[in-house]
Length: 232
Image (cartoon, rainbow, N blue to C red; front, side, top):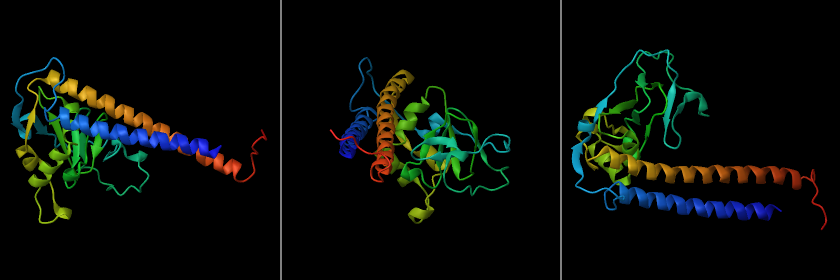
């Protein structure tokens, strides 16, 4: 009986590996223009990030909920984190982040620590908050910032003597040059494909966690004798 769950866990794990590999391939093909979606053509435009983003540097919004920007879950309420809250009691210098902003860890942008926000709240001053200008799709840019080639550009543009002190404040961020689709329609179409790919991964991740939880429950029941397996 436990072997049945082991098989399901193994198959779901292998499927997840394939989906993640496919997602990486889609990112590389679509975010670099190597493959174009049907119905779109024309040259992409080369821009500096400062041309398509502005910094949001607003403080004094202590009435807003405290948020955290995570690598895996994106922007979430701080209460959802398991680790101890080490934030300052004085939140007067904490930064406001709004729906549709991108927040990134100023000292970890070169590790891909960024996320598009679907919440409004405040975050630690250790984060930089940027807002897309008109004609820029935030979901597309959120995916672009996770592209390994892009993360390397942030690394090259970060300031500091060693990795532990590297930081990418807005002036450095604004200098990074990227090639993006000339129309927001193409940006959105690419983002929708990548969003769908990520959703499929998340669904399988949730399924895998359920299977593992079910197996843990079965082990407690079957291996302690609390539940007996019927004789065939």
